[in-house]
Length: 576
Ligand SMILES: [Zn+2]
Picture 1 (cartoon, protein in one colour):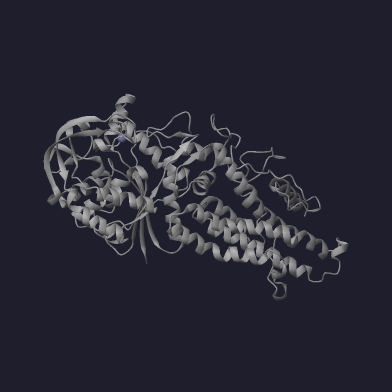
Picture 2 (cartoon, rainbow, N blue to C red; picture 1 turned 90 degrees about the vertical axis):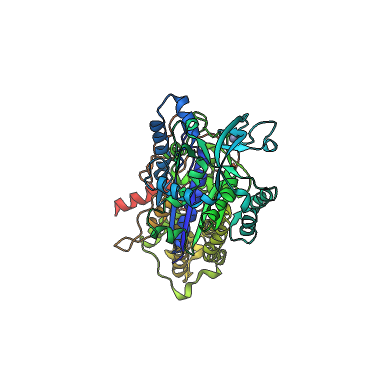
C-alpha cells in the first residue's frame, strides 16, 4: 500500500492562531483525507514550534513565564484540530514531545561532517530568526517584518550549505524534489544560482534565555530554532526504526505544505540537512501564498480584536463554512483577502442555496412522491431524453478523477469546482425535468399530462438519478467538508425500514432574509460572539431567490425551501 506522509509547518506560538494558519491546516487536511479515501496509507502531522526565541520575547512582553505562555498558545493551535475538523494523526510540540530532543541531537550528530564553529557578524531579524545579507533588506529593513535587523556579533556553529548547491539543483530540476507552484521552484533555483553561503545553526545559550536544545557536546550554545524545528518532520517518527522506515525512508511520498515566507528553509536548508545526514528528501513541497484580513496584512503576532481567530470563526459559522471559504476562494497563486462577509456569502450561496436546497428538494420529493422509498430503476425509463440528465451523469462520472487531478496539482479551487459541477448540473436537471409535473400526471391532477403512461417510470428514474447525484456528493465532498458530507450521506441513506430519513437542512443559511420559523434540526451553532456579526458581503452578491416559479404547487423547487418544506413534511408525518 502506498504510504503518504503529509505535514504542515509548525508555527511559532508567540501568539494565538490566525486565519492564515487555518489555510495551511485545511489544505493539508484535504490532501490527507483525499488520499485516505483513495486507499492510501496516510500519516498527517502538524504541531507547534515551541523553542523559538520569539516565544521567549513575546512571553517577556506579556509578563508571563515562558512555559505557561508557550503552553497556552500551543494548546490553542492543537484545539484547531477539533474546531476545523482536521484529521491529523500526530501533533508534535517541540518543547514537550519526548521524541523531539533526542531526535534533534541524533540529527545534529549525523550532520557533524558539515558543522564547524566560527565567529560571525551579521544583521539578524528576530522575527524571522535568521541573518540577512544587506542586499536582501528593503531600505535597510527585514522584507518580512519591515523592522530594522540587529547587528549581531557572536561565535556560532555553522552548517556547510555551500557544498550542496549542485545536488540541490539536481534534485529540484529532475523533479525528485517537486516544488509547486512553478514560480516558487524558479525562485528557489535562482536563490541557489546566486550562491549558497554556510548558515549559522546555533546561538549562544545566554541570548536564548536558556530556552531551546543545547548543542550536543557544547552546552554554551543552543541549536538554531530553524534547525530544531525542521527536524520535527523526522523526530516524530522516532525513536524506533519502524515508523521512520515506513514514512520517511520508504518508497512513498513525503509532502510538506508551507507558506511562502518559509520557502528557503524548506527548499534549501532542510534538503541540505537531509543530504548531509544521509536521509531521503521530501518528494514535494506545496507553497501557499498569504491571506490578508479586511485588506490588511495579518501580522505574525496576530491582530487581536480586529480579525477573529479560526476557532472563533468555526464556533460562529461552523467548520464547513470556514473550510469552504479557504478552499473555494483562495487561489493557488496570489494572496486572498478574508472577511466574515465573504465567508458567509460564499457559504449561503453554495452550501445553503446550492447544495442544501438540492438535497432537501430531492429527499422531500422522494418522501412526497414515493413515501420515502428510493425508487427502483426501471429499464424502460432511462431519463436520457430529459434535458440535463446526460450532463448530470457526466458531472458525476468525471468529478472524482477531475478533483484528484486538481489535488495532484495542489489546486484546491479547481478540485472543489469539479465536485461542484454535480450540484449545478443536478439543480439545473431538477428545473428542466420538473418532477412535480410528472407527479401530477401520475395521479391525474394535471390535465395536460393525463395519459402519459410512462410518467411513473420517468419520475422513478429522475428521482433515482438525483438521489444518486446527492450520494455522490456525500462521497466526493468528504475531503473538503467532512461534517457536511456526513450529513448529506446520512440524508441519502435509507433507514432499516427502507425509507430515507425525513428531510432536515444539511446546511442552514448564515445570513440573509429571516427564516419563516425556527429550524427544528440541523447542526447546532451558537450565535456569533460580539465582533463576529455578519457583514454585508462586499462581493459575490447573489440573488437570495424569491420564488419566481409560482406554478409548482408542491413548492419543492423554491430556492429558500428548507424550513417551509421541512415543516410540511413533518406535518404530514404527524398526520399519518
Ligand atoms: Zn523578519
